[in-house]
Image (cartoon, rainbow, N blue to C red):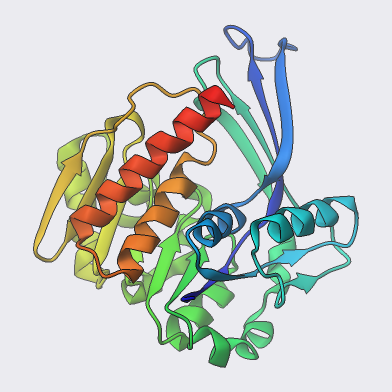
Amino acid sequence: MDSIFIVGGAAIDITGKPDSICRERDSNLGRVRIRVGGVGHNIAKRLAALDYNVELVTAIGSGFHAKMVRESCESANVSLKHTLVSADHTGTYIGVFDEDGDMLVGISDMSVLDHLTPEYLSALLPTINESRMCVIDGNLSPESLDYLCNSVTVPLFYDPVSCAKSRRIGCNIGKCYAIKPNRLEAGFLSGKSCDTIRGIYRASDWLLDQGVQRVFISLGEEGVYWADTSGCGVLRAECRSVADTTGAGDAMGAAIIDGCVKGLSTEECARRGNSASAQNFSQAVNG
């Protein structure tokens, strides 16, 4: 099987969605879910399901939440062989959604990943460079992102994770083979407003000018924008209503990575990502 290394976050996701209109500064009736998440973890599970040999390099604690992460990865056949175990608590994310499933606010504590230092990662570098692709996410420290961008020789796929974390990669963005931000993250990275399609084109041109070879910008219920040096376009979403946006971006990312590894065109990678995102929606509704 082809091997893919993922260096990024695994966390406990606590999410809440109200039964009706969410009233701020009040206790709302609704549903709360606790599950294992994190961008790195979510992409890893989906790639393992596509028959890749997946190595997830992350950092976790040693308590019950860490056990949840281990069990989730074990059940999905995701290797944690190189994962660091820390005395700190496992990463935790709290997300509050509105009645339509769109995020109102999220708070992320992924400070445990600060232990994934360049010194720790250097021992893994020879093995990483034997894989087909290395996926990195914005949960890593700027120092670790800098090290990986300047040391990894296989194609790098970057997921910014959030606006607050997107710029951690700094001037190394151009060393990434492909990138998958949403429109807000693309705006933060490029300094261009992405409120309109025209703005998204500007942000994409900026990313390509930095050296990124493939750009995929998630547009939520509007679909996905794709671009490379030979062309660009927008694919409409296969499902335009959203019941739970959690995981849709990670589903899209994994499908795009699969397409890149298989040598598909940028447009076809985006098409596969679009379909995977819609499938995630269907599972959220019916599950």
